[in-house]
Image 1 (tube, helix red, strand yellow):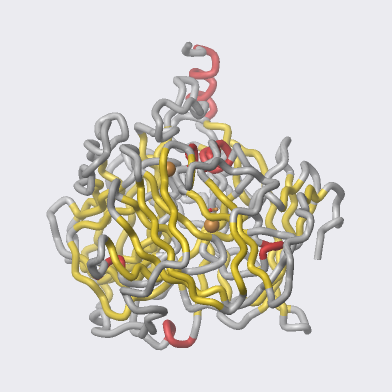
Image 2 (cartoon, helix red, strand yellow):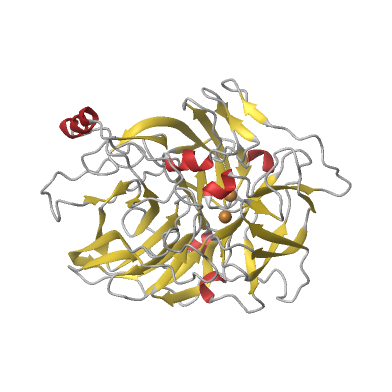
Amino acid sequence: MVSRRGFLTGLALAPVVYAAGCSARTSAPGSAGSASTRPLPIPPLAPSRVGSDGVRRFTLRVQTGVTEMVRGSETPTWGFSGSVLGPTVRARRGEKVAFTITNDLPEATSVHWHGMHLPAKFDGGPHQMIAPGAVWEPAWTIQQQAATLWYHPHPHGATEKHVNRGLSGLFLIDDDEANALDLPKDYGVDDIPLVIQDRRFHADGNLNETDTTDMGLLGDTIITNGIADAHLPVTTERVRLRILNGSSGRLYNLSFADGREFQLIAGDGGLLTKPVALTEIQLSPGERAELVITVRAGENVTLRSLPITERRGVDNVAEYGFDDTFDILTLRATDSLRASAAVPASLIPMRALAAANTPPTRSFELQWFMINNRRMDMNRIDMTIPVDTTEVWTVRNKDNWPHNFHVHDVQFQILAIDGNPPPPALSGWKDTVYTTPDVTYTLAMHFADHTDPTYPYMFHCHLLHHEDKGMMGQFLVLGPGQQPAPMQMDMTAQPGMSHH
Ligand code: C2O
Ligand code: CU
Ligand code: CU
């Protein structure tokens, strides 16, 4: 039902409330370029302060707001320290970070650090809920290489809703090795964060939260950094896009409209050993990719999502959006461009965790809303993993549905796909991998430290509807002689009452 009043009000107000979590760079209609696009909002860097103890402290507020996702329409949204998405958190390898997170939502939520190696009690999964009005204070030392990670809520059964309402932010890790490489690294200038999501709207601007398919929410409108129809002004010869597929269920097959080649330089867990020249890259929900693209002065280049080609074994491809084509973002090069260095021929070395033929430690079968025929039970530990071990897991999608597989706490290496070496694009550190039906993915990962007999980590399908429906399990990392302890379900209830 169209609410005439809501619709007219939305137009009349010409909303000023705009992606406060992002820079409020709206363009007036008729300003430079097309009147129908707005400049891509760049999420601000999260302010932080380093105390005398050397700890880098951040403050985040989970809040409600209103965002002009589609021009001329007001959408009630949720955001971190703003109306939608969140500031980009940035810290260095070796640094200790601490967060003060206040939940100003009308309901409980959590904040999970996707891709991060950290103690389980600070992982922000469904066992670390923050009650409305409460404060949660996780803190840990960054112990992994430079990468583009992200943070998002993880309340069991409601992750899709919380993320769809706008709660996602990027977490960039820096280190000396990555910094020494001559790559575009001027944030918001030639190093661009790009969160790609799909949304459905009601006529009054409200988000449509109906799960329309077995994949959950599937939107007909693409938003980039929180808004539809954006363009990116490009002022340098090369630009780096740090892309997150922040959608609930949609896969993207990203390419440029003229088919030009780009360099893939990083996957989920950081820079690859060397750049990979590609014309298309598929990203399933939760996956990241960093691309470097070269532009010519004065030209427009459109980032486009093409139909999904990796569709073997999936039944209702049209219903799952595999046939869709979307223009995602127009890169608009200025008439004179600052020169950029060529992408270095080698990036960051990676040591293989295990040989491709190492016998698997465990195997996982994905089907319907289950992993190994079980649905998530918050009171059940599905496996315990001895600390300081390298495990080899095989994962197979037994379904005719698309699924992917995400593991908390670690970055893994794909040793083999049906016995063959992974393609170069999947040869770096990963925390989420798409699983084509009937194909066996062999993954290797190392559980270095952070034992905890009480708090589990999660592994799950990152199609958020599937995860919410129980396509998830839990594991403990245990020290020598440690036994699983009674589980804790934290609900940080009062301001300042956080668990350490
Ligand atoms: Cu991005 Cu368990 O999640
Ligand atoms: Cu995660
Ligand atoms: Cu799934």
